[in-house]
Image (cartoon, rainbow over all chains, first blue to last red; front, top):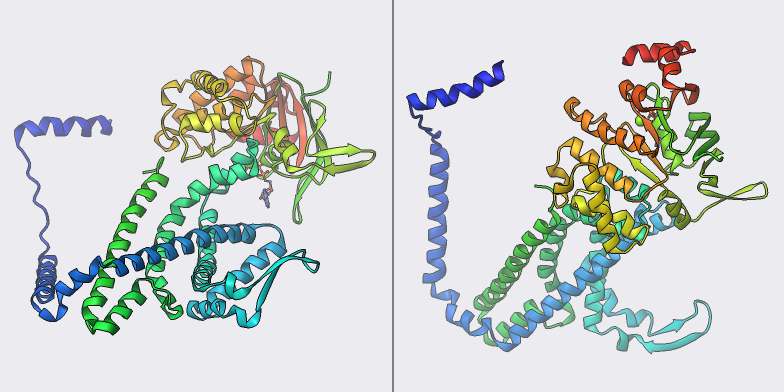
Length: 289
Length: 253
Ligand SMILES: Nc1ncnc2c1ncn2[C@@H]1O[C@H](COP(=O)(O)OP(=O)(O)OP(=O)(O)O)[C@@H](O)[C@H]1O
Ligand SMILES: [Mg+2]
């Protein structure tokens, strides 16, 4: 038999000569690597030798209390945007996949609307909602109201920003979650149904954990996008990172140094998130490899 | 004595395609029925109507005399709520051609899932049950493994243990060995034979004529959405009355 023949041969030959593997050479790859290294060295050199970067000013402001507070606000806005956005997005995705035509149309309409309107415009819209509805009342639809409040009191700049970010994020999250749910083999749903597993449990125990494998990389993109995206709320004069460094450099004129402070923080935050993403992906990848 | 599974004049269409055209079938407790038939004759659809994965258009399916998926009042059939349907499904185990194990759960978790969440049985009791079942299908040492790390034959044995974990009244098998390499078919058939000997009621769609001959009490031959003939293996396999049955058996043997 050929199989046993090929198995026996190498063992016999190994005693006679020891073979050495010579890898293929890649001169072009070498040249490209050298060039990249050179450019990197030049950039690094200028970064540290050009005094206009003002590293000592960067150091001075990097951990200034006002900057730290603005970093916290940036994180809060990101967290609110992502958590609320994905919660609403998941509901929208389930509505979209529902056999009920009305529910699925509503979800489709939502995604259409909120993906079409620029975020910055939407933020201003929420911020100025009081112009449209000076008072908001809560109660029976078309019936008596239990209480009502001034819109300005309820929707301050922070709420408007969080609301805007979350509603915007939900439209994208809905598509990401829907894509994830569709990526799960229909046989999984069927097997779970055949076992009599209740509907909600089927979703959270069987389907979503598998959908997470496609959801997490895309969600990671979204979160990192949002960390930087929160900078648009500066138009509402909310002291998040980007607004705060602007305030400082308007005062002291150290523009480059303070932009660098913001850049360093954004880098640090996204790096931490990328690392977290690695572990989350590994968690949901269990059982495959 | 009422039958364990009783189908009466079941019809099912997909759009214009009339897949089941009036199927009546009765399976007694402890009986093993093997369903044969050419591709597209409606065998899978038939099994899927039995646990209500497909709704029938007319006709009835009963398990131990209990109407499946509907409640009768007078001359009307009211569709049952999802929760009731799920409860009824726990009386029926289903084994799929592609196993459909949950890849992100371990073997033990796969088997334990339904008794815990569908039947709400206490964990300690379920743990003991799972251990017993894995032992029965010869996979006790694989309890902590993930399905992807098992061979096809082992995966299908886990799937059988998972179906058994509900302690169902009936087990349905849809071509359980068709996705397996030939040398792995035997180990799965062994487990199924063992179940048959211990008195489990089984409906098995398969092309394994040898299994049918050895284990089946009844062989059912389906063609184009109808049961063409049925009877003991000796009769249907060795002396089929219909030309189409003869042609089909000639081809698979
Ligand atoms: N969900 C569905 N939608 C539309 N048509 C379907 C659906 N399921 C099955 N069919 C069709 O119904 C017919 C019977 O299918 P079924 O799977 O029951 O056949 P089968 O006897 O199991 O065949 P096989 O031996 O190939 O598995 C086929 O023509 C198939 O294409
Ligand atoms: Mg089939």
